[in-house]
Length: 334
Image (cartoon, rainbow, N blue to C red):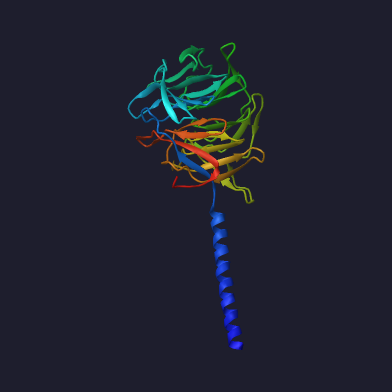
């Protein structure tokens, strides 16, 4: 009788041990789950390219200019984010170029600066999607340059940083109503080119890029009036929140109140992806971009969607489009 009891106890203990291993395994799998999924969308209908200008108006994204490895480009393409398809629009009438900047204000797109293979540029243009027409506006107020950043706050546009023979740090404000430029002072950051910018609400966040061959670590916000220095991107304090984001030629975008940067050059081209929490001024690393590693990509941001597209790896140029879904679990098979 005692041997039977011992046998039963042994069986019970064995079953309990197996169940414990099962639950540990399940919990371990849960711990490995990460949010932030990339899903490939409809490929771009035009030529592969990098260093293009992108801006969004309503539910449409616009991709203009760029470089395909042989030619500087001037074509304009409209992406329908609801139908996931492309339509070619009126060609950009200015000098074909790459590494220009763009933004949108009040239902119109703006494009300026860049490089045409010989010279830096400072012309500035407006695109009206209702008439599919480009109109030249007042030249950019700063020096001709490329590798700058551009964004809009309210009814004003801003262009700053970039390279005009050396790295720059100045910012200029464009007044749409008067078609004039004035210098916007107060940025205390370092000079740089190929920086990244994203906008959350009516605040722009600016950082990254390269200066004198070194990655810049300072990070700022700008609300149209005041510049605020935030936590550096190489935070090595003695706490559990250490991170290091050293990156140039990446792409920034925002979605649902958070900021993101992905791809670019960090020693070599990368697929790393980071999320910024403005309420705590902190960063977290996310699952990597699921396309090929690249630099000089572009981004579209809509109310509930964000896309990263184009770019290059060495002399190879891409035409793929990837939607980022921050609330989905990472899935490399979708």
